Amino acid sequence: HALARYVEKAYPGAFTFDSIIDEYLESMKKHYVTDVFPKKGAKAFLEKLRENGIKMCVATATPRENAKMALSLHGLLDYFEFVTDDTENGITKSRPEYYDIVSKRLGVLKERCVMFEDSLYAMNAAKAAGLTPFAIEERVHMGNQQLMKDIRDTARIFVKDFDEAREILFG
Image 1 (tube, rainbow, N blue to C red):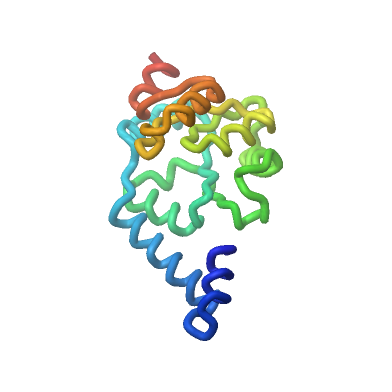
Image 2: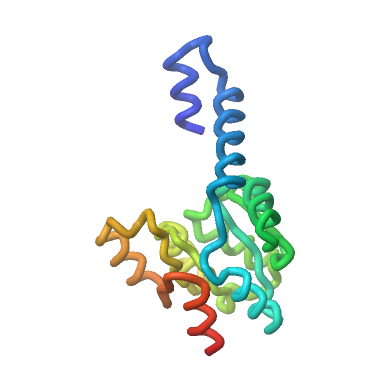
């Protein structure tokens, strides 16, 4: 939102805040339809979690409707109790309180929640809230050795994909 406000002020009359946000959201929607695919082993892992009665949700910084659309497109949406994003409660994933709200809504004690995450800031906040972060490899981070070290140090487990997660958790 700050960038949209900046552009609106830098180019008076050329753009409105709403038009900038609308264009951004539309481009993100296209991105989630054409460029975003499940990580390897995701469906089999979700199925194994469901078989074991584990409640699941998606808590994302991505606009909720885009995430739901992508999950639905790949046949994954029905595995989750709900999908929430940063705008739903007015608190971002960078704050521990976000995970208080999400775990309560899911009906699971924070201490019994495991999150799969690829961003360090969210892992840190979730860990501060009492959740257990598991890191999933994200290619965009691979060139940053310090970030990868910090992610590995923060996460209880680091996996390259969900096939590896399934093997670790279920044998």
